[in-house]
Figure 1 (cartoon, rainbow, N blue to C red):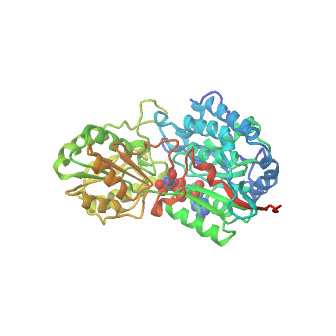
Figure 2: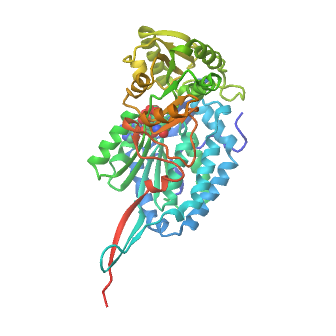
Figure 3: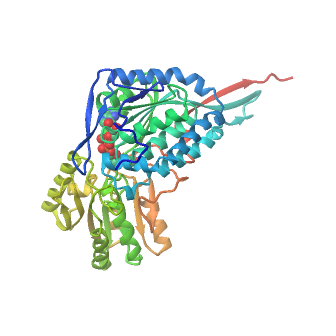
Length: 483
Ligand code: NAD
């Protein structure tokens, strides 16, 4: 049953200039619950006109918002944080019915609450520098907001990406248009309701729902959007970067996909390694950018590791995402389910499936293991975005580093060993934005920059660094006349 605070019918309109409004074209699209496959809501679809209206509202709101002091902007962010705190059950429910995320795995609300809380206080960190190094000058730099920032987010953890982008962008003095994923619009619309309750001035935060085309592509090509912050797939990231370059050279932050390796050396604590690596690829039914979808285990301990890994991985509880005991939900929709199934076929053709497979029950895929898969198979190379792991063996350190790095992706890598020299040597050589030593994803740290190298992205996000994403540096040169 829906928590009492969720009004029926669920709000599905666009939030532009401080008001909920239907799409101008009247167009809507159906949202389906992936667990029951029932239509649960009719969502208003932003087209080009709606998207332009949201950008125009953000542009109009910018000067007054920019001119507030950080503590004045912070009041709204802090209020939104408190409202999120009071709405954790509602957000978990909406995510479960729209994306199939088990409520037992919903950590997103607490993350969103803490992002808004942190950035409510952080605005004063936006600071420039000064220099007396030029004769007869006092030179200073100031950091200033871009103006209108567009945020485009994926469906797998919408509340996290919403808050990780919107909170620092607003704290730094920008105004925002956020487009949620067409697969997961409900929590973003609910956050819009909370933003309205928090009393943000009209136009400061606009939330629209719609598809990549036309809504997302309108934002990426928009001449009044000066910065775009995107989390999603590599192929969409590429299109956004192209559109940014072809329009107004807007600043681009891209957090993209991964094919993250975990390496298990013979001296590792195998219980810990098996528990952590299976949880990484099982969490959110494998629909996590940094999931360790490739595991390289030393041949000496492969049998022992595989037995422990499969026992834990296979114990995931498939079921109703609204049931507190469920740990493994369905894939988010039929498109993702078919995509994962096509990789299962590739894996069975190229290697051995030794656990799992299609659950043959709605959109569920069981925790699945492939062994003996060639390094050049598409299932070893490409992001599957399902609970599917390739486990291969290795003999030497240099061999496994070269296998781990043989990918265009570079989001997260993990190494399990008790040898500190090896841990540091390997961490240094792994091509990844984050390396876990005796831990793996989703372990992250709030104050550590997160992002990818190579084709996994451009830029970093996190407490200490996100404000920098949303400001530009200006040098002001002040001539000082000598006596
Ligand atoms: P996606 O790229 O299909 O969609 C992401 C967003 O982009 C959606 O809102 C979508 O509507 C929009 N979009 C689609 N086409 C567009 C276009 N031409 N122009 C502008 N916007 C467009 O990704 P997804 O399926 O929602 O999410 C899964 C992907 O996201 C995976 O690749 C995953 O690894 C990645 N991801 C990365 C991180 C990270 O932090 N690096 C985190 C989560 C997910």
